[in-house]
Length: 90
Image 1 (cartoon, rainbow, N blue to C red):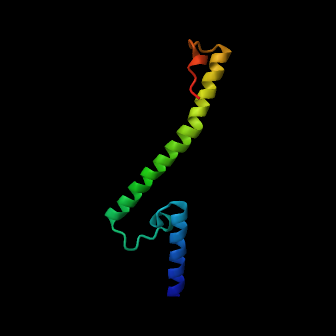
Image 2 (tube, one colour):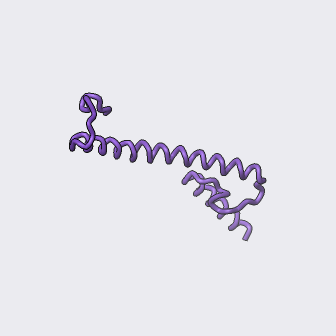
Image 3 (tube, rainbow, N blue to C red):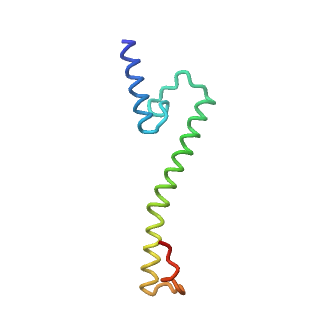
């Protein structure tokens, strides 16, 4: 039975590593983790998630949507922006 638990723990550690999630947050197993270490794990994970969110959402979603909205607003005449066609960033 102990061997099965060790095997499952090893497999869960591999899964956690593969998806970039701390083992303790994936399993809820806080055995051997102090409150300070847990706080460090959670803070580091939050920073990583914030970076991913910013890089994915802002650069890959918000910027293209904003650019399209500006293009349509200028072309339709809803906004008047002098020399807009010459100042568009690629």
